[in-house]
Length: 216
Image (cartoon, one colour):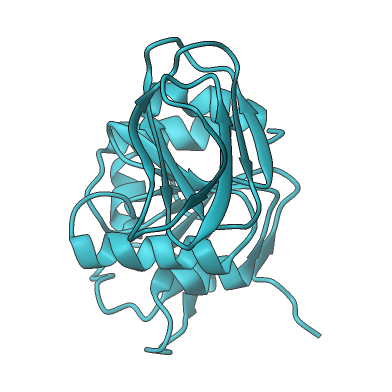
């Protein structure tokens, strides 16, 4: 029987080793008050003044950190990223992931792939933006004129309301129609999708609106 390394009834902050400032870790931690580090993300967590509840990964970038052995969970499998290893080992209603958005393009693409494979609410945060895959239906109370993009990682059907350029049951795909570089025209914004495939990105200022829409 599977037993997670850590289970929480509240959101969890995940910290990776990508580009992010300690202030962003603190912002995430204030909303998701259990922190787990993916390998070298432990260093960023400590810089933010937060000791991880667990550190998970292959430890190829952990380095020499003063961490108690009982929180270190070495998982050397090279067929999964440290982000995937963390998610597979944790149970929570939502994850705020810092250090996975921005920086190296290959790492960012791998993070998007991970979001496709895990249907739980996972919000990637950078110092300026956030991204998540839309559930079948979501209503967002965003500031008018705020930029927003809905990009299909897979072929899907999409309806949007409250945007400058709305869509109604449109066929979207990475190599066909998308809904990027859009703006909020009216509140609230509605996004309706027929599958787990649509990557929503917007300014970091919309974080609390996203959390409210995802039930947190």
